[in-house]
Amino acid sequence: MDIKLYGLEESVYTRIVRLVLVAKEIEFVEVHADPFEGGQLPEDYEFRHPFKRIPAVEIDGVRLYETDAIVQYVDAITSPPSLIPNEALAAARMRQLMRIVDSYAYRPLVWGVYVPIWWRDGQQPASETIADARHVLGVIEGFAMDAPAAAFAGNTLATFYLASVLAAADSVVAGTRLIDERPHLREWWNGFRVLPIMARTRSNHTKF
Image (cartoon, rainbow, N blue to C red; front, side, top):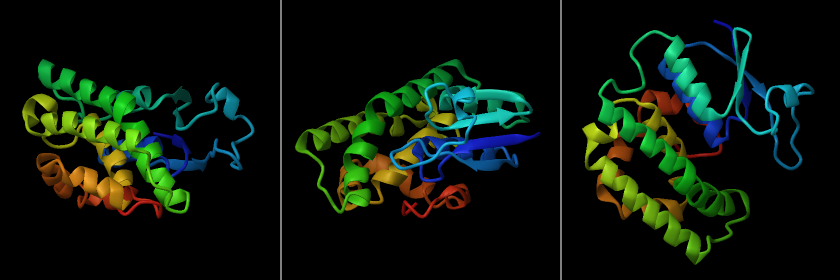
């Protein structure tokens, strides 16, 4: 299988794809693609992602963008074990958690908490951002307390989504304190963050 992954290793969403590929024991080539200010994209990137975001992949000639589509395609075309639960409710909870991370957790925890402190000389998050982050972590902890239905048992697409976001947030004091407020989530995360797959996909821009 010939796979090229376009993105940045410090990107949360690129890491999600990397986690899936590593979990499935698939070799891939990483191609540097930086859509942010001052960054550079490959010359043909607009044909790989019309919105010029990351990540994007090419798998045996098939081009895909959007993390959700990429990881579900990779899981579908590769050998077991699947990263999508077989049981209907667990699969639905997995997708629900993925959407929660996408829609409600990524923005406050990564761009609101992690980026200002880690990348912008210790700029402190706004109180509204902290409130949003606190709320979504409380919702996610509900999933952690109901592991089978929420697909928290073992590796799933949802756990990789969540792990990538928590790895960024837990790299700064404000994020660590927010996660510490949720003991069930903290317990799960403390176990997950030390797995070999996390070490293999970690960049120099996060602690985990």
